[in-house]
Length: 109
Image (tube, rainbow, N blue to C red; front, side):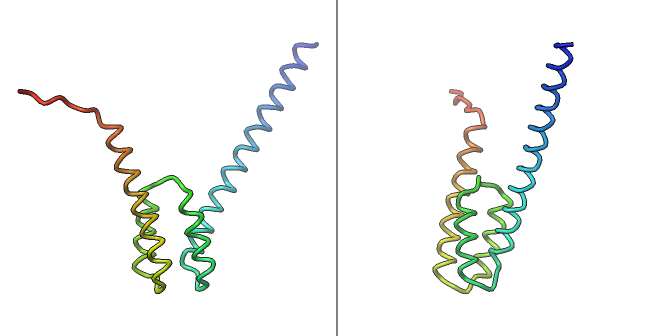
C-alpha cells in the first residue's frame, strides 16, 4: 500500500513539473515573439524596450537577421546605433562559439 502511494505521488509531482516547464517555455516564446513585433512598432519607446530585451538574448543567426532588417528600416539614429551594437556583439559571440566548437589542427611541417 505504501509503495503505490509513493509511486502515485512521484508520478503526480513529475507530471506537474512537466506541465509547469511546458507552460514556462510557451510564455518565454510568447515574450520573444512579442518583443520581435515591438521592434517594428510605430512607437520609438517600444522599439527601444524591444532592443533592451533582445540584447539579453542568446546570439542566433535568426536574431542577427532581424536586427539587420531593423537597422535598414529604423529612421532614428540612436536606435539604429544601439541595434548595430547588439548585432555586432551577437556576431562576435557566434564566431567565438564557432571557433570553440571547431577542433584546432596542428600545422604539418
